[in-house]
Amino acid sequence: MRQFWLAKKDKKQISLRPLPRPGGIDFEIVAQGKDVPPGRYAAWPPGFDPERGTVRGAVVTCPACGATIDARTTRRLFQQGQAGQRLVAVVCHPHPAPAAFGGTPSPLPPSGRGEGARGRGEGKTYRLPTPADLQAFRAAQAALAAKTERLRAEWGLEPVPDENISSQHPSPNARGLSAVTRYGLNTWSDLFNPRQALALITFADAVRRAHAEMRAHGYPEEFAKAVTAYLALVHWSQVNGLADLSN
Image (cartoon, rainbow, N blue to C red; front, top):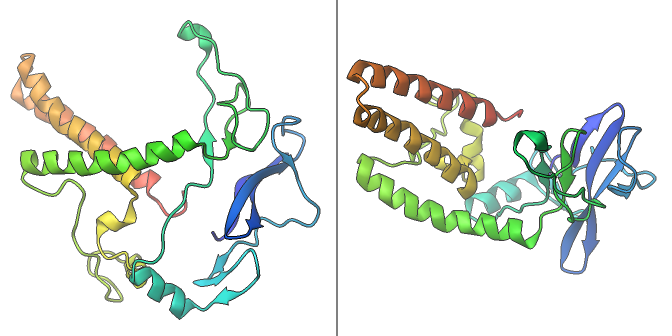
């Protein structure tokens, strides 16, 4: 992680803070600022700097002992498939106005240590992942495999793009992106985790099905094609924005 920030505003600073333990690293969420609700998160420890992450220029620093791994070794480990991923935080968006749906908002989380649900009237809130969050991620892996197999048979092509990313500099098909191949990300599908890929192909499937649904309800072919094209462009626009490296 290059840095640990979750929110960085003048009146609200919220960050993950690594907590080394024997055999691993835990996290807590710390915060400071006038706009931070009292008691929601752990107190900001003196001297803590979220800008000091665990990696810079492919050189990794252990947050427990301070030992470093050089850039060449880091890239080799990625290329050999020895690097993984971990869900470290959950970003929660506020509920819509409960009156609009006849419901009551969930209670606010009492701390930054994983309890509670979404906040009210204060923008995004943050919490640590729960076992249910981790199980949802694992379930997405199985769902992606099943959906990919079904859509591959229906579409006659790979639902999650599997074209190779060129490692040439400059790249003919991925200008500005070819550096990811140094870390073993060799196809476009490698850029998304299973949950992200499942969401993307689910929306793509819905766009493709929209045409058949409109035709089944008697809409003219040209109208159905036009609406489907607009839906595809909207989907592309959302993916293009959300997948931006600076997002």
